[in-house]
Length: 178
Image 1 (cartoon, one colour):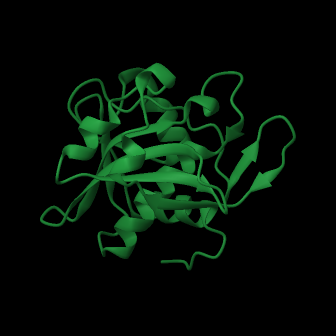
Image 2: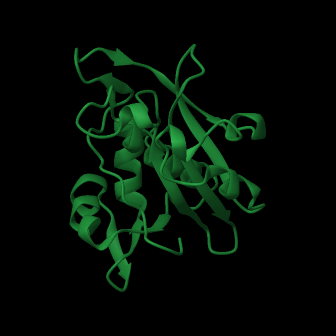
């Protein structure tokens, strides 16, 4: 990703998301985001990124995390499948406004989206490889929570096979050991 880098806290790694106030667990789905939905996502509503611009980039795919049976977006992910390089590039990831900060409703959103990217990489035969550029201050956080490794410079990171499988198995309870 060009620009500032990925800057999202991985608050909890579980096979769903958890209501912070009660500990109640909710099963989720990750689905493709359609253009009519993207048009309703605005910075004025608390989103940090321009998802409309991201959606217009033809090589990128946008996904949303939703609670099963509901349509409210809990988080968004922009990735690029790079077949020639045998990896998935994670460009943007964001918790929905209601899941940001100290008053967030759900924990586990970001980890679920990163695990989804790793699962796509495994399913595509890329051995789970997901790369991204991290904000410098979060490099150690991603090493600890995601098992990511620095691969270039001070910010370029990768999640490799072993860490990807561990993350997928933690977030997808019915996942086979790929």
